[in-house]
Image 1 (cartoon, rainbow, N blue to C red):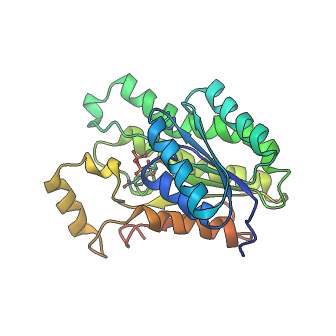
Image 2 (image 1 turned 90 degrees about the vertical axis):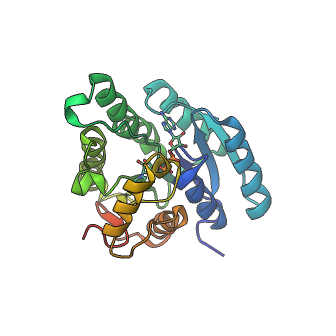
Length: 248
Ligand code: NAD
């Protein structure tokens, strides 16, 4: 039996893609889950049913736009009120609005920073007092290879994801004397809706540059989250690359 049995976690943007795989992986370890979603209530409720039936954990779907401070606060407080503890926070919600820099509008810039970076501040700020009450608090931020290596047409996304890495290191330093660890995961190219927007010929070009010659699966990111949460007590302030060797 996993020592995470009975722990409580929040996964932002948890109703599909990488977030949904993280929910399933943590549920398998016996973690009760708050599944945050922005729009798709049906997908979130279906996942709630699935993990409750399959893994016998409790789960709750909570609508919140985590780029809004008030929604982020409500999300965290709903989690605490419903489960009376909080041990794990996975900041996973993210969007892209790719445009080459000359065509990038202020709105494209702000939206990506708000959803991908400001949300991390809002949710973590509200959650931290509760995470500090946990015997082992865990914050895992889903950054990206694009925050490390850059990406064509992705100045906004790259800045936000690099910002998450800096945030992770600084907060890890501040919390190092406590039981809370803070780490980032930097996925390479993972087969989810986010990658589905990329035209087929560009996808093939990308694949040919990946040393392992394949895209990653959402479950492979979820396994990395589970490792950090379960066995990562002496790992803090790090970025764990899960990218098929594309960035070393
Ligand atoms: P996805 O588009 O399937 O999932 C993103 C999730 O975030 C969705 O559930 C969406 O509803 C949610 N979301 C977006 N804005 C939100 C908001 N304001 N409030 C609450 N939820 C919101 O894509 P994914 O690939 O599963 O992405 C998950 C994370 O992984 C993202 O942070 C993304 O940047 C990162 N990532 C993905 C890849 C990849 O190749 N797929 C690579 C590196 C990093």
